[in-house]
Amino acid sequence: MSKMKLGLLFPPEHTEEPIITKLVKQGLSLNILKASISQGNKGKMILEVTGTDDDIAKGIDYLEGQDISIKVYTNSVIRYEEKCMHCGACTAVCPSGALVMNTGSWELEFDMDKCVLCGHCISACPARAIKNFEEVLR
Ligand code: SF4
Ligand code: SF4
Image (cartoon, rainbow, N blue to C red; front, side, top):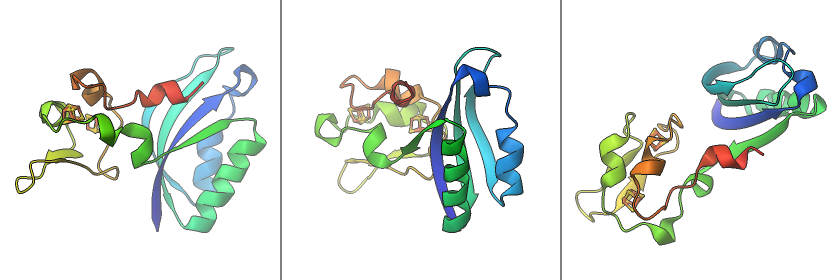
């Protein structure tokens, strides 16, 4: 089984499509981390998707067939390591333990699997080392 975080941007004409139901029928387990959808406007959603690589690939194909823009969130999307000063400010606001200080090296460690994309770390970081991942969805 694989797990992946996907950002979806819906065109206005697709905000009423039952895409979640269809993805579940394709064998995927879904966890909606964020959603902002209103009828007749663009919709945004961040999903954590779990399934076989094959089922995830089919799900992404289905979404792209609906004219939905997809962003796959990875470590490199969320954090600019070269800007990080390892001050630890972000670890204090991270609710999931995705950001922790390594007590041996005193360097920041990030675990994308634990991240729930809440965004608290973005405003907490004085170095602007964490990208606003919602901006990716345009
Ligand atoms: S987005 Fe939220 S869960 Fe993810 S690293 Fe930042 S504070 Fe932690
Ligand atoms: S708050 Fe910013 S600079 Fe400080 S450890 Fe976190 S990512 Fe690095």
